[in-house]
Amino acid sequence: MIRSLEWLALTKSATLVYNEIELSEHIKPTANYFISVDLEELDPILKKKVWSLDLPLLIKKKITFQMRQLKREIENWYCDHKLMFKKGLFRPIKFVWKGNGKIDRLKTARSIIECKSCDISKRFQMACVYWLEEETKKLWDEMNETARRDLSAKRLSYIECRWGYAVKDWITLLEDGVADWRKHSFSHPLFWYCEEEAIIQGNLLQQLSPDDQSRALRNVFKDIFPQHTKGFCLSQMTAKQFNDVLKKEPLKVYIVLLNSPFHEQFQEIIGRIFTYVSKEEFLDFLLYVVISKIKKECHDYDYVELLKELWNECPVDFKKYAENSENFEFLDRALNHDYRSPFKEPKPPSYFIPRCVFDSLFPPFFRQIFRHCTITLNYY
Image 1 (tube, one colour):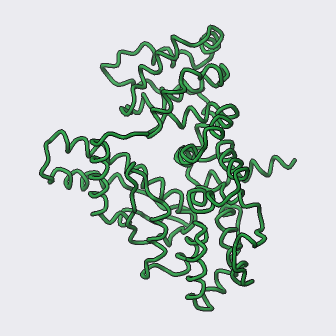
Image 2: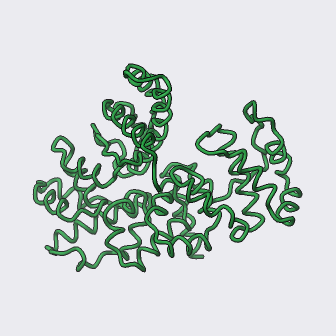
């Protein structure tokens, strides 16, 4: 996707402002598995910094808007790592940013791993999770026997299964003196480890065979994962992989494409939506647009125009199904609202959030429990 020079400049300016602030001061450990990411209190601090810049007012407003996207990216990073480190989160963290406003996860991980002031056992775990062979060997050699023994003795729970198994398997590999991890017999197929928010954005995905890579990307869309993880997977797919996932999980793909930075790609395939989704999925998609975009007053895309266009162009049977739905009154109000004022109608009490949507609403702890329960139930 080609970005304008203005967009790139605004993103660069926003990242520079963020890098001047110690974000970890706003991360609050609250329990074993929860770390509250309270970045809302940063807003006045960020605004003050932006407003102190010697720039035109319009540019300051645009930078402030761009920083909201970066804040969401930071929140996603913390959410993907807080199960891994619980109360012992790294402090400080200096994020490495890509030009598209996304955190460069591999470079950020390497920065943390190389930070001598951070706990070495946590740096080692980070190296394992990001599948960085040289770093894991180096840190293992530097660790004292007590730290090694503590890591080796750590018990796994299903809550931390994939990243925990990754660490355990790397320890076994190092203890056995295996020179090349590709020749090691891991406890699970390699694509299995990629079905985890942090691991899949590390180094392992690129090391998989094409078939295993396709399987990992497909499984993320099939399972319960947040939208930003699925968005990362979309960015890694070949055209064939994308078309395969679109045919099997069309609603999930369209929902992910409805988010930045995929709007251009969404625009390219929105005309085919009636080819792929069922009338039930189409209604879910319309409700998602209203509840997650229009009601939240998102302005990164013309969601009101999208809603009306889809409604006017949908097949007769799709429209009849929606009109007979118990949620149609809510949808009808959204379709006919005067958008000179915000749409404030309460969500319909009968609205059932489809699984493809609610996976983005739960923190990793609950997603892991739900995923575990789903897997357990499938055995019976």
